[in-house]
Image (cartoon, rainbow, N blue to C red; front, side, top):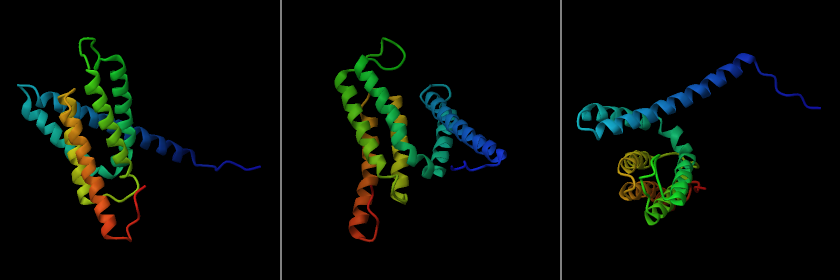
Length: 182
């Protein structure tokens, strides 16, 4: 009969605190982006909004190795939300915000493509081009949310990840020693 590994109770507590702290930081970052976007688009607090977005951008650049690995899961939530929006023909919490079926389907396919391209980031070390492309992806995502249901932001999100994928493809062809992406 096998015995479970005995852990110090304090180790379990510290692990739980770290996980909870990480989630609180993620939620805090999302609030910074949301409030920053809202303020940047308003007429009265533009400077404060852009300062919040700049702060969120710096945080994103410094933590890119962590969130790039979670990007397919984050995009999965967007895919689920868009699927529901296409099904209902609405977006947001109001019944007056109509989502045209064609626009919704295009956004859905762009998000599916983004998720497929983001999967390639999980299996390799990020390069400078990857980091720049991911920062561009975030900027385009903020634009896509701010101008929803415009297709431009979602198309640019896809293009940003395609640049990272294309760069990896070129580097792997030049150097056969590089391990292939999954």
